[in-house]
Length: 138
Image (cartoon, rainbow, N blue to C red; front, side, top):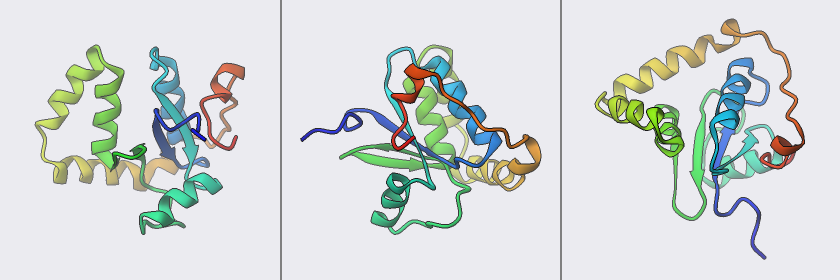
């Protein structure tokens, strides 16, 4: 049986991080073609994704973008791919971002990630009814 997420891009994020929740909302508002679904890294689905790939299951400081059956990306590469998928001006920005070395862009990502809890209050994001459909294990 086919899952509702198998043909989507899955964004895995830290469900307890205000900065991460801000970016999930940002993507939701711009996902006009309904290409993305979301799962927190702390969820059972997120934990399965991490353990099946031998990734860290207790530290949630990395964003992942997964295209089931094809690939997964992490950190700055995931962000650039999300921008590319959203299209328009975001696609142009992703092309500029790809000119930067992944080593440099991941260092910037890591710097923000280390300080993310200081950058945002930790308020919960409450999706509306339409948005709830885009979350796995809400």
